[in-house]
Image 1 (cartoon, rainbow, N blue to C red):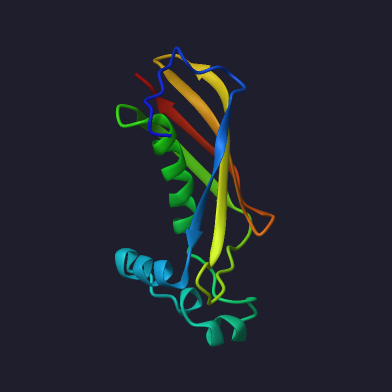
Image 2: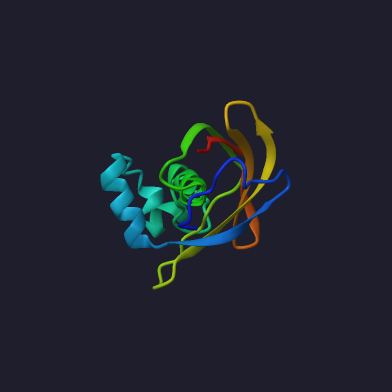
Length: 142
């Protein structure tokens, strides 16, 4: 997705190819440091299970960030994300192994708007479960 997308080259209904993002326990610990969110459910399996979770879970914001990364990678460096929003619908469970969890993000061009803007609807899944709902971005393209 490194090629610059232009407003003229985008068609309503166009599917954006699915991209997979790995989330490991190490990436969660790094995110704890970067965000300042050291909630133990994001790094301590014993405590996560003691509060009824299936295992350690990813921060909601790391899941949202991968969807945002998907949009910016697709749109290219000269584009601007004008709007971006999601609702969290399920957890990303991150097992303690070398592969962790996978977040798969895909999208579709929903509409072409004025001012060289396009609306993109996004889908994010992990372990065959939709983890984001009402995920949508508006991008201003060159």
